[in-house]
Image 1 (tube, rainbow, N blue to C red):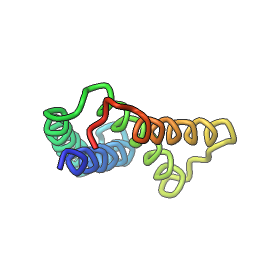
Image 2 (spheres, rainbow, N blue to C red):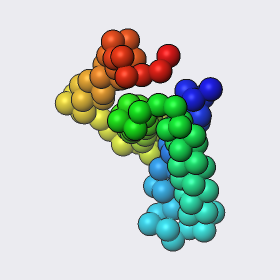
Image 3 (cartoon, one colour):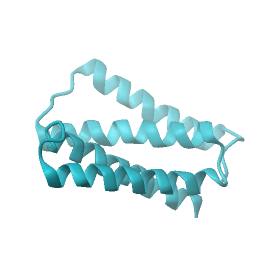
Length: 109
């Protein structure tokens, strides 16, 4: 269940960050409201995942996958281009998450 909490925490954080871009520095009301709600929900779910999982692993997964998802959304929704070093860096983040999940004894499976 803790991985489900973490997945939805990442999803909520991604929605919040996307709304942050859409809020245009908090000058638009509804995207700004969505930022606050999505981040609040994300932190609540993150706290639930932390009841079972180590903080370093949770934060690595939450921030790493959040970075990758936001980069993809930035490209698809906002037209933000990624150069080769950026794509390579994102691939390394994903590789790091895979290594943690497959080989680390600190994760709870």
